[in-house]
Amino acid sequence: MTELEDSIHGVQEYQGFHYIFTFSTILAAIPLIYMSPTVVVMLKIFKSCRSPSHWNTAHSMNHNIYVVIMLYFLFNTLFFIFDYLNFSLPATGIFTSWCASIQPNHYFKLIFLFTFYFNYCILILPFLLCLIRLIILIYPRDHPAICSKIMRISIPSLFLIPIFCTSFMIPAVGYCRKMGSPLQFGAVYIYYAGGWLGWRNSYIHLVMSIVMCSLTVICSLLMMLKLRQSAFNTTSTRTRQQSQRAESSLSITMISFIIPFINNTFLTVVYLTFPNFVYYLMIFRLFGNDCETVMMPWILYMTHPMFRKKKIISQSSAAVSAIRGTSSPIL
Figure 1 (tube, rainbow, N blue to C red):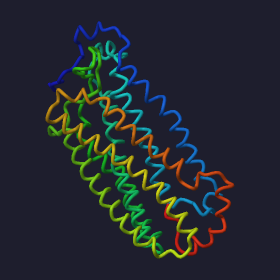
Figure 2: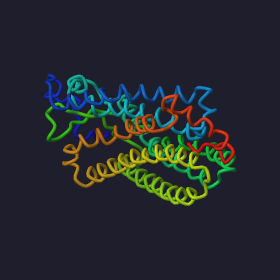
Figure 3: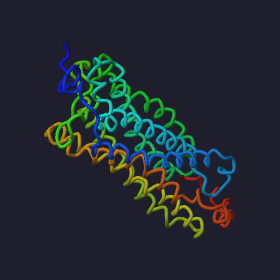
Figure 4: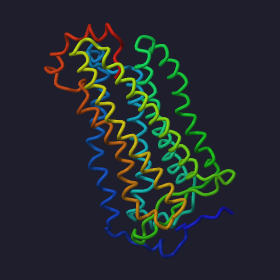
């Protein structure tokens, strides 16, 4: 029989637990405050980019980058939902008594599995975004054909790699596991037991975080070098300023990619080496992951020229022909 470490199932103390308001409830409520307007911003960006007039402006976004960003929004939102069900909500103690009274099951396992499936997706997408932008900068005339080939390979890989990373959980069962100090008695989260070949999700997640973070940073550094070289080759001051503003917008968003990489890697290392201390860092895990979900759409919406007022954009409409005469939009 599979050992369920720190399980609360069938434990009398947890079956008779009654919910009380604690700091964990506050931590669970805060994300709902900032995620609601963030979803609205995501929908505004989606709607703006879907408008036919968008693709006829000087600040239009490259189609491949648009696809990656929309997938990034989608997977981040799905990750937030499943992570909330996996960690934040059970930690409040609202469902502790119910969890303790039922048997471990595959429904709990699916919550845990999909949490990390979508997390692996959003580990891959920043690298793909950086790679496409780098290709556009290096091959300003030939990038449509090159990026099209990359997308045909990368999109299926985006779905297949997370499947490979989480497939060992298929025979596992999910169960409610108690949290330790400093969290109050009754705080639990969903975990799994009984995966194939004794594989551990923590090691797979750590390797993926390090590899994808390294690839993303390398692409970003190469992109910065290329930008410095190409800045001196543009003759139109207005065109150069517009490109720099739009490029700065997406460059700033790279910061939001790196923070979750560091956050997840640090917490995984602590969990593997000093498991008793990991619960002291739960607050950093919560906001570290949400930083990735929230920062990127807000920075893009507030800084990208595409989303400025129409009268401001119209002042630069004369530069459309100049921009399209040199290369496709890089954003």
